[in-house]
Image (cartoon, rainbow, N blue to C red; front, side):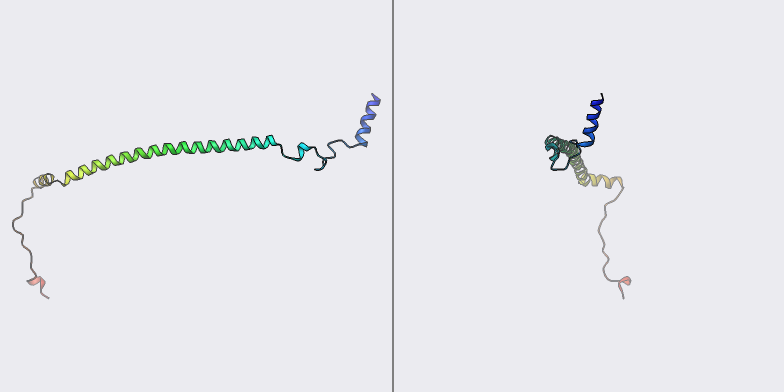
Amino acid sequence: MGRYFTLTLASAAGSKTKTDNLSPKNSPRYLQRPNFAFLLAALATLLAAGYLVQANSLSLKGYEIGRLELEVRELKEQQQRLELEASGLQSIQSIEADVKNLNLIPSGTIRHITGRGYAFNE
């Protein structure tokens, strides 16, 4: 046991270990350049995240387009109903019926005021 202890003390005190001498020139090759597998995994993760964002955005746009197409269809139907109602209200029959309901009487001759008289004198 004594021999092992002296060798351990001698190697620790007298010589440098591999971890003591880690300057950029003396470091192992795998520590000098980035790990290719790590870079590849990071790139794949970024691409997957970008794909998910684009797919989600495209899906939402599809639902929004469908909703807007439905709204356009409903508005066109409402416009057609309103045009039919307007044409019905403008027809001569509806005007004559309104005249009877309001108890209006037809006017005879129309007299126009000419520019003579008290109100037109200066």
